[in-house]
Amino acid sequence: MSTATPAPRTPESQADAQQSPAAQQGERERERQELIATYPYVAVHLVASGIHPSTSRLLLIDALTFNDAGELGEEFHTVLNPEGDPGPRHHHGLSSGDFAEGQLFSTQLKTLNRLIDGRTLVVHDSTEAWGFLVAESRRAMTAAARANRARNRGRSRGRRRRHKVGHVPRPVAIIDTLATARRQQLSLHDVRLPAVAAAVGLGEYEGASANRAQEPARHSARQATQLLIDLLFALRTGKLATLDPQQLRADRFGLQRSDVRVDAAQAPRLHTNPGVWRHGGRLRKGMEFAVAPEVGLDPDVLIAAGVRAELNYVEKLSRETSIVACNQLPRAAQDNAGLTGKAMHAHRKDIPLVSDEEFLLLLDDVAEAKAVLETDGTTRKSPQRNPTVPNANSRSQRRPTRRATSSNATAQASAAKNNQQRRRRRGGRRRRGGSGHASGT
Image 1: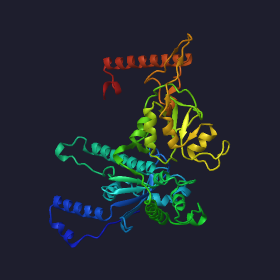
Image 2: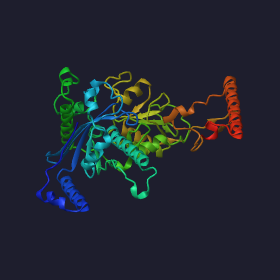
Image 3: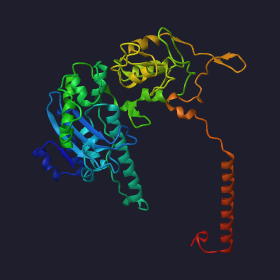
Image 4: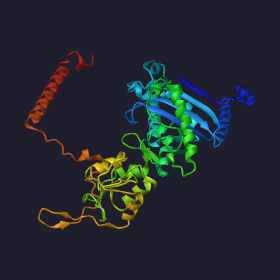
């Protein structure tokens, strides 16, 4: 259940059948470069079984190439067989028969490479969308490499054959429409594509309905891809959030984030956390800070500035988090109406919220780390770069290891004794020249 509509071949290209394979490949690449120059953008809409690329699978891909005038070029649509649980039907609108007839991602990767390579990729929420494309591509490449090793085991070098499924797509840039809407300070209470499009005046978003549930998945996917293109043109009046794929990498969930963000999340703590910041006070080295998506500045700018000031960056909020940079602020101290995401959770946990500009101003005057009180009553400065103190993004590392109880020790001793007796019996059979597994027959 896969369709791709390429541009028609010219009469000259049809004569390539008489050329050598290398010449044919060069001619095809020349034609592809001409198509890229004519349609330099590709919009991709994805449907997946979950939100984490490391544990979920892609179910549907729909793509359209286009240019600055809005003219459409090639189109691509496919339903994928996830080889596992696809999740609830109301989420993707596909039946078990659709998945049974679906394609494996490995068979579609080369087509995606031809569509995406050299173009500007347009997606809604690049963290998730680009994360799934990269994760599925690497999963397919790993499986192909494993199959090649098994197929060529025992063969001479001249008789080995390699099956290539493609590579991780190579766009020249990635435009994220969701990040663009946030950078342009749009008020978003729902971050899904139709809701963001409605926020800029592209129709009205009515949410889920019985009529929409009856629409074929192919029709809904193509509507979403076209809406993604329309949203891009509506947002081009302001600055677009454009990412360099070479500066992105996967976090522990497979989501593609910037190098700055991943490094900050994995960095060891520089100082002990002195606690929650309060309005009117100074930030102190060692405080934990988080950055919500609802900021006008690039989050990487805020994260890098906080790390340079020797604060500890965290992805998830906890009651130990000191401050959150977010432009979605409550109207009153006890009013959380309209707050979403990290802003809502921070308000519930009584964590101070400040705007991105105010956060940068606070970083201009950061107090020294709080002194640590020793058991003898003396004080010392907070340790600098203590590698034994993990980052707060992996709090589970702080849990003490379980000590072996007396029952565990007894069980371990019994197992060791049984193993020793087993080895003695095997040695005796070998010396007697007995048959069976020990003699190798």
